[in-house]
Length: 436
Ligand SMILES: [Zn+2]
Image (cartoon, rainbow, N blue to C red; front, side, top):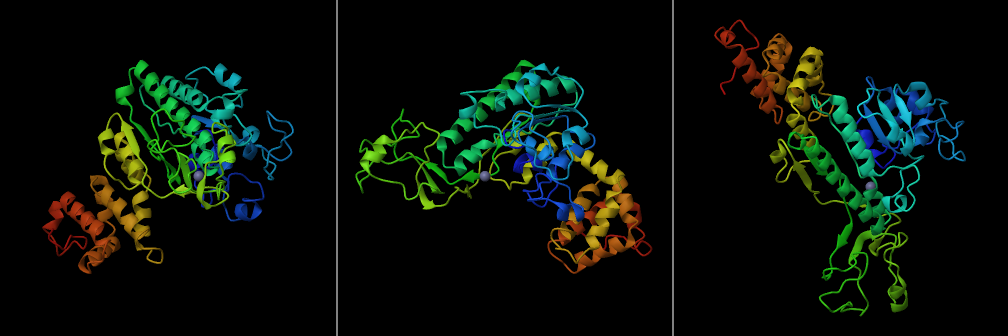
């Protein structure tokens, strides 16, 4: 990723936190109070995982070092941790690198977990990086390394899951600097192309599910009847009219629904003087805000490879992860984990906890129990829980909605697995009392 590796989306791939700003123990957003309540900052969660994550590349060194330690690249900057712990030196159980020269030296497929933090904060925008790359790899360079490294490491046998984020497309839009956002997007597109090329070279493209999407859109729009070949950062040709039919001034192709360039100056001298390719230019906004906001419309999901046909039509966002897990055959593994890890008893306890929000605790517990109750082993564990069976029957008989649906399903599965016991309804309290 090109953001701090503890930032929103990458953090969601490995940490559990009720607050996105708990990136590090900085005594600003996360400090003694949060730690005393048993919480762990996101950077610390990252380095504490056991076994360690195989490969992590991104920015955000500051949350990994104490205030007393100077940054690897910029000695004038210090870490921000106030708990006096260097996560890199004290806790990380793998190799650590912070520049491109070291990345190039890594032996592809080497077994040691690798953490590469290439920037003190977020990595630079690609538009700026490409002018003076210094020791910072691009998104496509990091991703190409990751794919080749993980292919070697798994020797094409076990496969891998890789999360890649063109993190700063979002930041360019928040600043309403479309030049930054679109250059980031081009690099993201290059990255997808590079990944496909490598997978094809290695003969595994058709065995790999690629899913490309966004976590949200932006208040970003473009159009205005522009002719082919127009500079998208500049003015529209407006079907050859070239100026607005209201104020007779040129009209931008790109505009934001909200943002800082409000009200956008509209006099000819100023409009003629704009350098549209500059990273300083902010496109006009319809409503005033210091930072432009995310957009609310649906985003696209593109998929290629095995089970990619599941990613068609309109879908609820959470289904994406489930479809990826299904394609990777993790579905059955999760069921096995629940059964072997005593998860059924925990879920049954949860199903009785009516003091919590019913739909998120009882309903979810029942749904997971329904999913695992197809397994004989799980069914035999569940059927011994007499009070739980009674609860299921009560839910079904009282027609409590929506819990009735998974309750019905569990009872049906138990009946299927234990057909012999159905014959002896009077003795067995668990027996499914309803005909389905
Ligand atoms: Zn954002």
